[in-house]
Length: 351
Image (tube, rainbow, N blue to C red; front, side, top):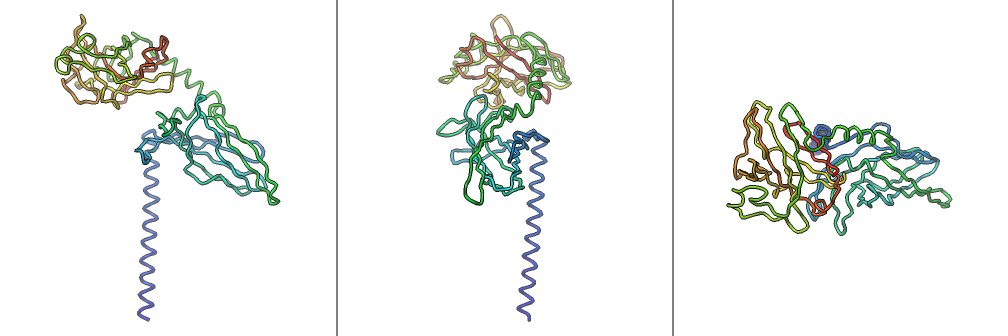
């Protein structure tokens, strides 16, 4: 009797532990989801149908970003989630075929089970979408690139008499959303500033004056102190320095450190370069007449403090390594975004 009581007691303890673990798991999942929504690492959709013909309905659920650890290292992978519904009176199976972004074939990795649905059933399926840079793949730069995802699923009608038949499903996210994406692009283009147009925010006033390129930064185009202490910096093979000359007025009530201003350059709406992610990006103060003083690594490893007091205005040059192809393009399509403490200035350059 005592042995039986002990067994029942231990079973109850195990059940309580399982319930506690289950509750913790649900709570942790909810927390992660909420954090993803807050930091813009997820874009959700309502009633966005990608395909709805005959036996199958495919609906777009969300895009989200998540760090994934591969054997070759970690990447911030971009995911797309589909909901698939079997409207037929028989089982169906779907397999991804070819996915494209801007006519470029994508690397696709399914994180869910094979799409194999019984009649009247639905399921959600997640895919990692990346650049196909064989032998390895490269993560997409932003979630927004997934707006241009299109592709094909191959389907199989699975009948009881084994006389199966094949079909294909083609989808385009941009077409499914309709004019929304195009209208967003139009509005964004209309809000872009041109060279020498001033942007004013609650934190600063900023004017992008010029964009040029050079394979070396030294005292002739950058900083005399830089030249004395470091000799010069040469761009890596296949890269060049994009030199962004701008005027900055501090409208904040506190001093601003110019190395903390993040600059993001996007070429052809696809290739992105950011000062905050590049150890080889630099900023210097332009004092006029071809002279420069003080410089700092754009990641904040400062050689000189580039601070600016309230209501002061000065000129600066940022040197950002970019692909040499961009410097050689006579009519580059560039989007240049200056960001500081939640404020942004967006310039569009089509030379």
